[in-house]
Image (cartoon, rainbow, N blue to C red; front, side, top):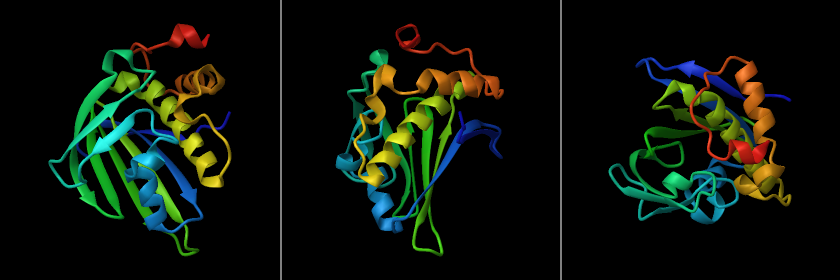
Length: 180
């Protein structure tokens, strides 16, 4: 199983997982993938509601079946520079989306999840791998159950592969017993 995530330590000492995808779409189109609730529902693990995307604006996350203890959470927009960069708090983590135009007219999307706890790296990388695979399918116009494919998603295999690749693990994994 090919892993698409990397584990890194940022310049400020915090740890993160980073995944990158390339789309044959212009940056404005890919920007909608990470900001438009109608597009996010195809791949993001929670429903997403934000009045505006400007620093300090609140975000509400809800209906995440994989996080029963945080079925509803709030975040705050940290930075927004459309259509280049968006970051916001999501629980105790920080999500960063960077979009880079490519010479062929496509866009490179880089998702960086700055972790509150490094021992969540394997589960976080596996989760984002599943989510971004759902975005890849939506981008191709293919049918997908999105981030909510449940036991049909290869999450457990990805989690085990990230652990084997040395990503820190050990944090509780909601629903892990259900995936066995």
